[in-house]
Length: 573
Image 1 (cartoon, rainbow, N blue to C red):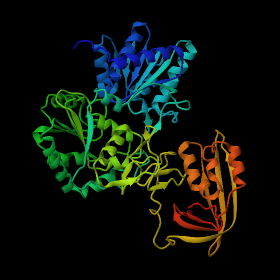
Image 2 (cartoon, rainbow, N blue to C red):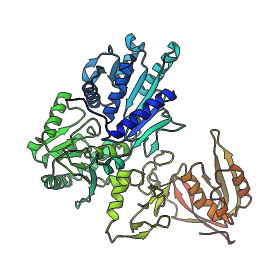
Image 3 (cartoon, rainbow, N blue to C red):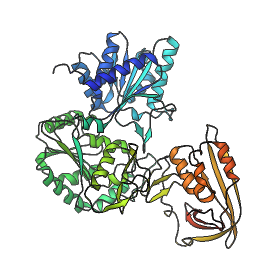
Image 4 (cartoon, rainbow, N blue to C red):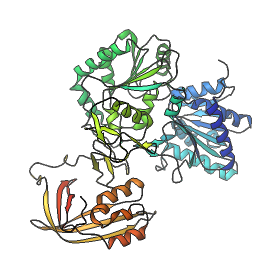
């Protein structure tokens, strides 16, 4: 294979990256979507290091992606070692080393040669996997090791991360002043790549079959869906799995091939039973590497049309001719969801688009996140659909009568208007009604009724008279403040009810304004743009009107305020 030339936008990114590496010492991020050619950018960056006589380490969690990055680097003319146990190679003799963080992490404990290497650059592919808040994580420990080594020996040391999904959890950005990666040198989005014909356009099919109901599946302490709960749902829907797969088979008959994301290994087998066996293969984490390579090669050659897997084909897999992505599993992670969709977007002479079939409700589950692929899908559903007849009061976009959050755009970002929502029991942030994780503080949004017994269940709403109230603010140690209100009430017995707000971000300020200021302050609009000033809030407290009566409901084992009733005219509800 001949050496590849960088695309124009890749040349621009590479130029910016080189410039910033000379100007700053802090970690940099390359924010480039799936299909943008990150492997080629990594290769050019490492070639520059090799030719300068320096040393570099490229870290990737996925062994198949390590193999792919090495192949691209060698094709560009570079020479590299591989240090990865799953690839059965542990060599760090050459200036450029491609490795898994697991192997390096364990190697640092007993390999003195590895411990002492003066790496001038560490490149992290799929950099969203770095968790700087966990000091004991593999990435942070090895970054600290080589960072301290460079300080002791006095040589130049830099870190560059690359990812197409620059966020963790439910949308928390991984670069910025308070993040490990201080700056993103570029933003090559999926939407831009599609618009400029570097990726094919996805379109979302609306399955006519009944969608799996994963709404009661719990999230475990690891942040993943509970495996037993998933299997229970699937055990009750074995006929549905067969029905869906037969429908998928009919659709893909007229297409090139499909990635099918199943929930469990047993679920993979159920999918296989309803698909053409001679054209279908299963890939799991237990599939040997050589067998996996053989399966992927046959898929590229068109000998296999259905690749069924359990979350192992999201990265490191390049089958450009496949033009369909099928979800029969829920994805708790927006990162994994967008990566899985990205598998079908790569260019191929054999296709002009990518069909996304979601039988697990993921579009609704992640629909409140500002992701261009998902937002575009939601927007497309509204076109020429008579059900979309409710205009948003903020941006004017029409929404379905069943909509929970507006699908429109406000200043190129997803509109923040919610028609139906729930507040986080910890930080009170507004979240989608079906959200499982708070988009502000990452706490699990537990069903408030899950742990209540029928015997002790209180009335749906309790009316309580307010006999006194207190309002105050506390400044937080790291900056910002929290606003508190406590109401002394009496119903059948005296008790207190409190509410707190953390107006330290735009979303949180809006919540504070609409949930408190607009209701309990006369002439509230003058405070709308000034809520970031502690002095203003202190002055505002003097003008607070106390409600006469509270309507309370029982949530998360405590009373929370459902509605406030006033005697004076300041109540704008």
